Length: 178
Image (cartoon, rainbow, N blue to C red):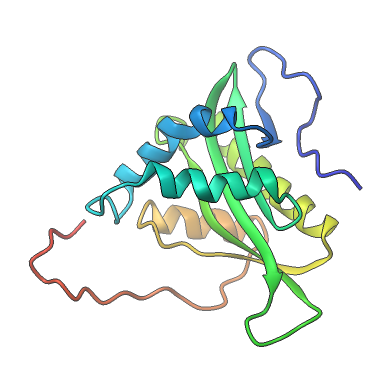
């Protein structure tokens, strides 16, 4: 089975295309989206590292069996992305679980038909990628602090169930709350 997540092999003008990152050029292509994601997140007060981001995304390009970086684009403009990995349960074996660490649709597209289509196609791409690797399930960590209620509603509508929650405890009380 192919990992191709794109509906068509040749992107059409004004048509949403979702594809797996496959070249170092994709790192630069996604740079503005990655920066927007960081700036909008609850972690925006942490200095951003292009090198750390590049190192993560390069893993998806060099090791597509274990990492995926999916890009949603229209007219050569990035709309959003999804970054995930696959591996065994922490204390188990023989069952693979896909973990989605970053799932982002740019703010200017969120709440639009195009943004909704991008989000759905990115999820469908992650599902297809995971099925091709015989994963047991997909786990999505929602920790960015961006539109949590909207994200919850969207994921539930697309068939994802709640299996827990994320909690945080700030240790540096002098830090600005986001």
